[in-house]
Length: 346
Image (cartoon, rainbow, N blue to C red; front, side):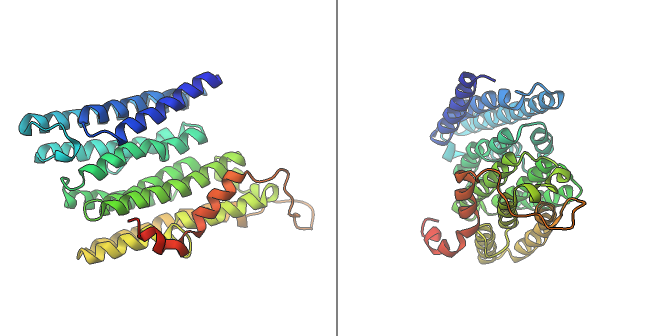
């Protein structure tokens, strides 16, 4: 792909995202989502591999269906209430259809089926965009419409997402699929709290995007997409492997890393809302995800490839660690001590 084409598609992605997150009218929000979908498709299919073409086709069909449902929901609400404003969604059927449309856009269970397949067929950099930037516009729509949506339905979908994300990721050997199921699991945490404390959903999304970006960029630097190749990275790039270990533990939500902060706040808020059983269920289900994060961390740092010499590998760095990865790793692992400062913005 030529640099000019990449520039056009990247600019279109930024334009589509900006239009959706800054709009108050359903039609402009829908137009922004469409621009986003059309701009990411060439980036998914750029390798011309059959798997990439299949991923692009699946992505297009799913997103087109979700966009049609979103527009149908907006039109139904406008028909009954005369309102095209995003925050004025009051008709119950329109709210139900919108929940389905946004769940499909985000990859929230039970509409998660497309996401692992699409991520597996995409290059690592495009997979990063699909996991973070492409979820920002539907996440803002979820944030804006959260008072109108059914909290019970969202809670059930959230628990189902966390369960499926954990269970289906256990047996995977492809790292992109593991990260896709990780994303589905994290979306469960975001969806369960959106009706009660929408700002916590956004905080969780920002921190998830930050940590996921670190993981994807590290994997892209060490050119790894399978567990079998991840096992040989310690001998080549020990510094990057160590960073990957810490970031994965943060993504799992273990204290004292950054990833623990949103889980802690969400459990606290759910308990305040007398939803202790839901908080307990989602916490226990996230232990399933913890298993495959630890599996990834184990493969990245503790497994050494078989070698004939008896001495240990020396710490050597063939080239310096990219500064972006170093900065992202620091923020992905060390923001918990400044949580009081973060809480003032929530």
